[in-house]
Length: 364
Ligand SMILES: *Cc1c(COP(=O)(O)O)cnc(C)c1O
Ligand SMILES: *[C@@H]1O[C@H](CO)[C@@H](O)[C@H](O)[C@H]1NC(C)=O
Image 1 (spheres, rainbow, N blue to C red):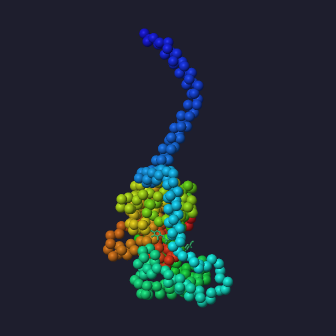
Image 2 (cartoon, rainbow, N blue to C red; image 1 turned 45 degrees about the horizontal axis):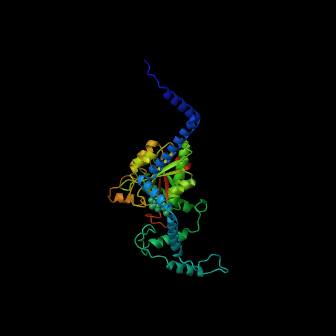
Image 3 (cartoon, rainbow, N blue to C red; image 1 turned 90 degrees about the vertical axis):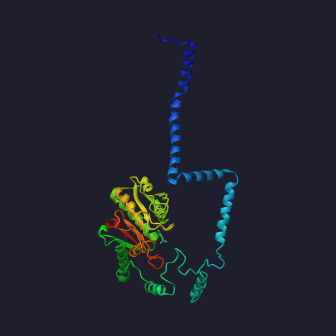
C-alpha cells in the first residue's frame, strides 16, 4: 500500500520545481565554470608550491600580504632606493671622460692608466674567484703570460691560413684538456671534440645551444625545457633566455648537492637536458655526477657537467690520492663539459674550453 502523500508536500514540490526550472540553465552553466575557476586557482597554487617549496611559498605569500598594508610598500621601496643610491655614489665618477679628448693623449695614455691601476685593490692571488695565479705575482707566472699575450695580441684565429700557430694552439689546448677529462678512456667513446671560448659563460651557452639543437634533431623537441639545480651558475639563465628554453631550477638536498630524485620529477617529453656541477661555485660541492648520468641516459636526454671550476683540479686531486668520484666523460650520459682555462688552468681571463661527447652533438 502506497504511503499517502499529503497535499501540502505535493504543492511544495511543484513550486520548488518551477522555481528551479527557471534557474536550471543558468546553474548548469555557472557550476562547471565556477568549478573550473576554483580548479585553476588551486592548480596554480600547487604549481607555485611545487616550484618554490612550501616554505618559500608561505614566506612570499606573507611578504606580499604585508606589502598590502598602506605605507609598507612605499617604505620598503624608499629603503631599497637608499641602498642603490649609496652603491652608485660609492664610486666617485668625478673627472671620468664621457667624450673623446680634443687632442690625443700621446704617451700620457700609459701614465694615466698606471695612475688608475694604483687605485685597484692589491689582491696577490688571495681574493677568491677574481684572478688565479700560480705561486706569487713575481715568480715568473705573470711575466710568462705577459710575454705570450703580447706575442699573440695581434692575431685572428678565424684566419687559419694567416695564423696557423694560433689554430694549432687552440686544437692542442682542446685535445690536452679532453685528455685529462677522460677522452683517452674507452668509456668516453673516443670521439670527444670541442672548442676554446672566451669564458665559462660562453662555454655553457654553446653547450646548451648544441644540446637544444641536438635534441631537436634527434627527438623532434620544439618546446625545449632544461632542469638545473638552484646551485648552478647564472649562465644557464642567460642560455635559457637567449635560446628560448623553459628553465626549471630545482632545490638541492640537505648536503647542498643536486637532488637527483627532485630533478627526475621535472623530466617530461620536452626535457632536453639536465646539469650538474663539479663543483658548483656557491658552495664548492660536487654534485652526484654518476647518478645524474644514469638519469640522463635512461631518458635519452643531454647532460652537461659544469667543470668550470673543478676541471683543472679534480683530475690532479685524484692523482694525489684524494677520493674523487667519477665526474668526466668516463661517466655514461655526460654529453658536454665546460672547463675554465682562466681559473685553475691559470691562464688570463678570457679563456675556456667546451667539450662534446661526439661530433654529432657539436655539429648541430
Ligand atoms: C666561473 C664559473 C662559470 C663561468 O663563469 P665565467 O666567469 O663566465 O668564466 C660557470 N660555472 C662555474 C661552476 C664557475 O665556477
Ligand atoms: C672549433 O670549431 C670549429 C667549428 O666551428 C672546428 O672546425 C674547429 O676544428 C674547432 N677547433 C678545435 C680546436 O677543435
